[in-house]
Each structure stands twice: as structure tokens, then as C-alpha cells.
Figure 1 (cartoon, rainbow, N blue to C red):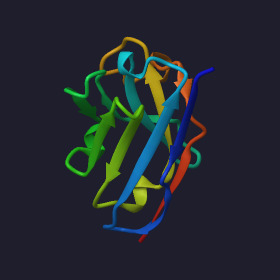
Figure 2 (figure 1 turned 90 degrees about the vertical axis):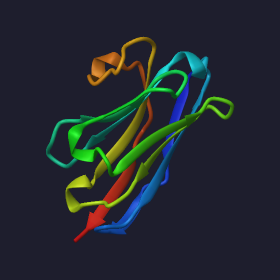
Figure 3 (figure 1 turned 30 degrees about the vertical axis):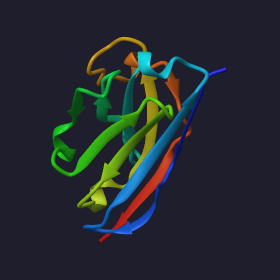
Length: 124
């Protein structure tokens, strides 16, 4: 049984930082592209970042480039999202997901397993 679980969300002031973690189990982790999405209240879920199977390639939505960093540790079946220079518009529930093949996989349908999400709230 595949499980994906995010952690690390919270309340932070604008300009602050958070590190989100995602633990995956029940799958051959190194065979999956991993991605982060987010969904703000009243908005559709949007792609944030993706990392290739080996971790050698990363891809970001323009709005987070230079502020967010995605990384992974295949030995621990973990993927991370470092959020720096946070803005109020980054407030959202952040989701981690696995993709069996697509790169960079910016669409929800590219991903098969999803976590329950972790709330990030940035105050102004």
C-alpha cells in the first residue's frame, strides 16, 4: 500500500522560511518523479516544483523560482521543499505527489499518489 505524507507546514511571517517534508512508502521511490503542488482557498491546485528520479533535475513554477528549493533523499524515501522569502500569496495547502513517468510533470494527472497536504500560512 502506497502512502505519501507531508509535514512541516505552519504559520510564518512574510519573509520567513519553512521546510516541508514528504515521506513516501510502499513504492520504489527512486523510480518516481516527485512533485509539490499547492492549493489556496478558492483556487485550483497548482504545480509548484518537481524533482527527477535521481534528483539531478528540478523544475519550478516561475512564481517560486529563486525562493523555493526542492530536494530528495532516495535512501530515506523523502522529498523536501525549502520555502524562503515567503509571501502572503504563498499561503496554501501544500501537497506532495509521485509521478511514474512524466517529466517535469506539471499537471495533476501526471501524478498517481498524493498526500493529505500540509497548511502553510504566511502573515503580512
